[in-house]
Length: 285
Image (cartoon, rainbow, N blue to C red; front, side, top):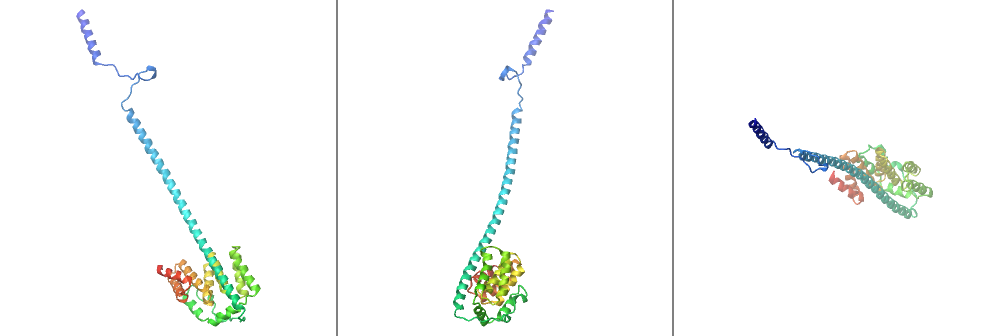
């Protein structure tokens, strides 16, 4: 019996040495034993990487939205800049018109005292509206029927009575001061009906062309500019009107007609400011 007890104790002792006690973390508060898995740090790293990727994706989306907003703002600013450039060009053109008008008034004042008023014959000129619109050759033919004597008599006829000056100045002020373009159109139309032989007539027709151009009534604008070229080829507005006809042809996509207008401008008025701009245009068309 004693032999069997000794053998059992030996087996128990060997088993205790073969099965060591589990490792426990006793460093936590409270002294509780908590086992630490080997894969806990890897999971934390994966979670951290996922958070980083998500944050970067959100930042990229935000950046794309900001870039899109900036592009929209740039496009809007570009449109505003173009509009301001157009308005600035209009203002500069109006200033040029004012200076030309002052020179014309001074010139007409100097000649009215020494030249008698001789009525002009309107029938010596073929009206521009009877010619096909946008035909430069028709303008050349129409302009050729008018002689220098007709122009001189038309200028001399403008003794510029007070009522004539007041009517014209009132129409001009509707444009330059009041910016009332809708009222300016009938005012200029009334002026040319009341004073068809006035020295201001070519200017009035040119103003009408400009006003119709501003209102995008291009056919009416063409008719007025063609009238200036055909009936008043010696007027200071004839070169400007040819330039406008070229611009209208360009807007309509008729490059051939635009070239003809610019070539006619350069050949008939080579020293004018519009002719210099027309030469540059011809190089690009």
